[in-house]
Length: 172
Image (tube, rainbow, N blue to C red; front, side, top):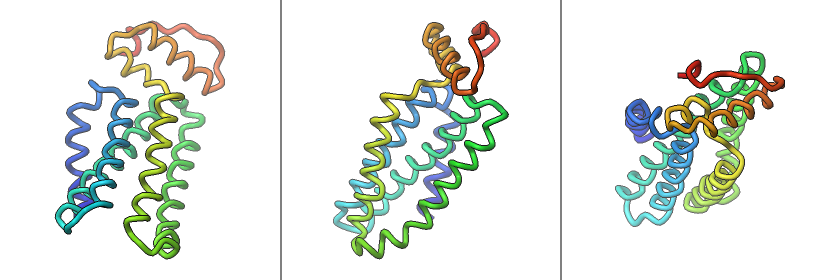
């Protein structure tokens, strides 16, 4: 129930702010929400505090899931898009299949929250901040044409294209 409630809340918030804040920034906010929610759930003193932490953390997970799909659809060409989506779903499924093993090995839900959610979230925040640029569409919305051009060339390089010219008006 908590997971589905958080999904509905997060989708409403993403629909309102998704284009204004940018994909990368929303992914970073989602990772911070995961960290905050997991810390709240891990150190909770009662069930209500633990449930609130899970709600916040699940909202962050939904943000990451939705923003990563949007990010892939905006940066990867049609030729490779299906491959990226299948691979991301594969890791998502394998991660869920690994949950019972982690619970069995660690035997304490607080350790599971720390090792299974907090450490990967910190690593993702660092890698997202250092290596990922925002999508060109979001950069155009920020009115930063030079960054948008750099992002377009990055997208072209990922998709195996040569240098190309595209006007920023075509993106809008």
